[in-house]
Amino acid sequence: MAACCRLRPMESEQTFARYLSAARPRAMAALTRYFRAVDISEDAFQEACVRAIKSWPSKGVPRDPTAWLILVGRNAGVDALRRRERDRTLLEEPAPAPLGDLEAAYAEEIDTSDFRDDVLRLLFMCCHPELSEQDQLALALKIVVGFSVAEIARAFLVKPKAMEQRITRAKRKAASVIAALETPSPAERATRLNAVLTMLYLLFNQGYSSAGGALHIRASFCDEAIRLTRLLLTLFPGQTEVMGLLALCLLHNARRSARQDAAGSLVPLDMQDRTLWDRSQIAEGQVLVEKALRHGRAGAFQVQAAIAAVHCAAASAPQTDWEEIERLYEALEALTPSPVITLNRLVAVSKTRGPAQALKGLQALGAVLDDYLYFHSTAAAFHGELGQWAEARDAYNKALSLGPSDAEISYIHLRLDELEK
Image 1 (cartoon, one colour):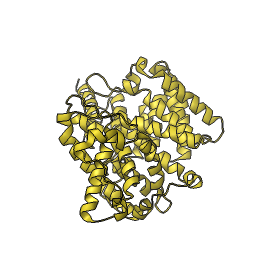
Image 2: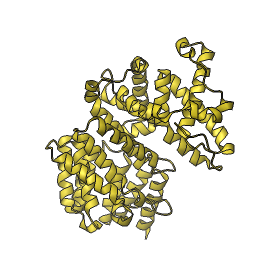
Image 3: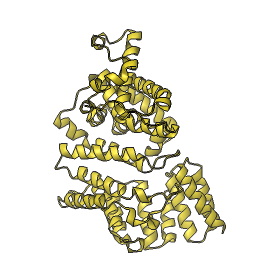
């Protein structure tokens, strides 16, 4: 049972926004289970956020912001349904506690066990076979995680307008699917597993390297992706790709504390203080990836985890086994060809055979990755290593035009300042 509401001192608007963002996956999943309609749930959650922004600055943040938002969102949704005279079956239930009695009713109304696993359940529902895999992913990222259209478009490397049209079509098609709110059977879950793994990976990535804005790292997204992947592993204990994804997230997350300096600027991997890395997460990730690979059914997440494990095994940057990393990226390209994977392989090539060789490979990616920030920042780094200052400046300026986070902006400006010296 959730604890009664205890209020914290006033906090900044940015902090409130962080609470709302972190709460969205569980709150939206719980509200969707309750209302059995995505649009009603989205409206209810947004209304709860509005009320939080009005209430929390003066009263403080509740001890459990997620449960508060679920309760307030449920009240708001029921009020909206009454006004529109819809869903009479739902309205036969006793009315939730009024907002004025929120604190007194708090412990009675919200049981965290009711919404603990709702996010994973809703992710599987979004992966309905009537939707294409890309529509499944886009829909889940919009509904469950609350990514903006621009953020989702960036994740898929498409234009925002095209992504907006895709999401609109997917929501229309999925309305009846989610309205039915049927928990998939074990067999159905197995067929939808790969799409759910991809969703969780995108959720983790959005937390690990947030697209734009003041926060480059959203720890709550990383933690939620790891929590859900752990839960998924209990459902599919023999699935090596689930092991691989959990290992990958843990190995990356272990480096989180070292990725920004005191001023908030990014710290490249080869310059990070490795004493700040979380060795317990690294050890767990290494065990998981080794266990998964022993099955002899290597998949994309396992190979990516193996790459991360090589980085984490190096006591210092010069000791990194870049030849092994290049071989692993070649294996990953064979499994899942992608221009982004090729870009990452070329970083390894720059370490094993030099930046000039890597730049040759980049030329073939220019057309498809022209809107990808890291393509241009990588090209800038290669040009800088070769002393091609003008080309490096142009590439960094192009990266600045593609909506980097504040931490990325700071890092790029530091690199540009170095080019001027």
